[in-house]
Length: 250
Ligand code: PGA
Figure 1 (spheres, protein in one colour):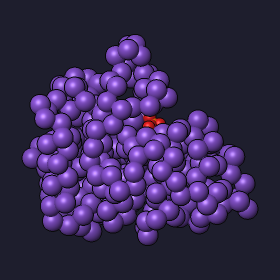
Figure 2: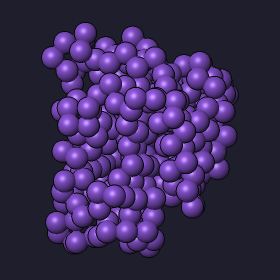
Figure 3: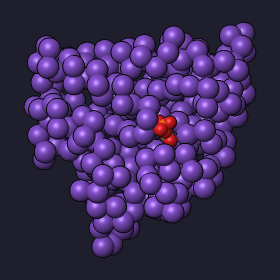
Figure 4: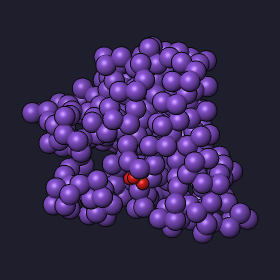
């Protein structure tokens, strides 16, 4: 894993956007793995700005999102489908038919997971996968304890995750209890992974990830240590508990 320390959220978003834009320009039909949450919003803003200013085209790009809440209608403002539309898709020229997000309202959820894996595995793998990290170390919605060999599956959300995400809802009770998520093995199939981390709330988990040799299913993000091409873009606050000399992965 390569750790790149950046000053703040803005710099993290800006560098991430340059990496994505570079990929879209050099490979116009690339596959992008996308994430939701507070972390990638700045990156998406930068992509939109660049699209407006420079016309970088997403006409041939395919996108694959990590996860979706179970039972959440795509039109619901709290769905990840809606989040992506509002924060990115509505503002760039990616064709609707190129957008892939698990369907949390599918009648047969197991079949939906299988369908999503088939989509993901069609043709070449994802070129760049964007990830955030939960304060408990989750990636996607793969909570601690998830098997590293998991593919797309249904998860019961950890209470800490529901509480962290309650900020997007009116009340905690409204936060769904389950989600569909790409598994750890599905995520690791991406050719390149970009983990974005910002803020003091992520300092503890970054310390755990970067200053120990732990590769353990109790820390889902530690699976990234098995991948050949991972870049962590983390800001000063997120790395505030990691003394430079202790950075084990560079
Ligand atoms: P955040 O969530 O970007 O809202 O901090 C990250 C995550 O839970 O994966």
